[in-house]
Length: 76
Image (cartoon, rainbow, N blue to C red; front, side, top):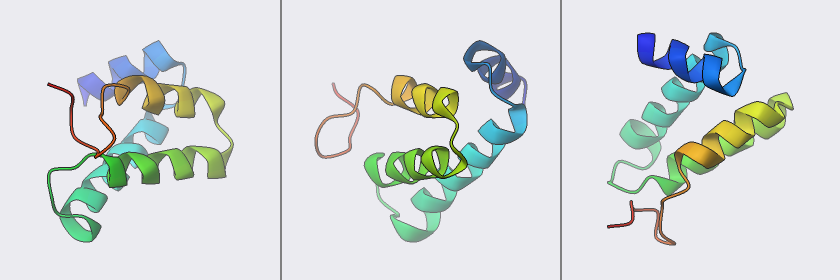
């Protein structure tokens, strides 16, 4: 939890928003897209940020996952 608190402070968003994003991210990895691609989970996080209308939350997701390639894997 300290990591999320630090990230929330840096992004100027509520800790609860980042906790929701982390839960959503893990849900996507474990249930809907159980593979090693990050893209499905990140896409869901972006949709949630847009849905709640939080530009800072969207910026944070974009910044955290900016090093993904087109297939949704981390760039080497």
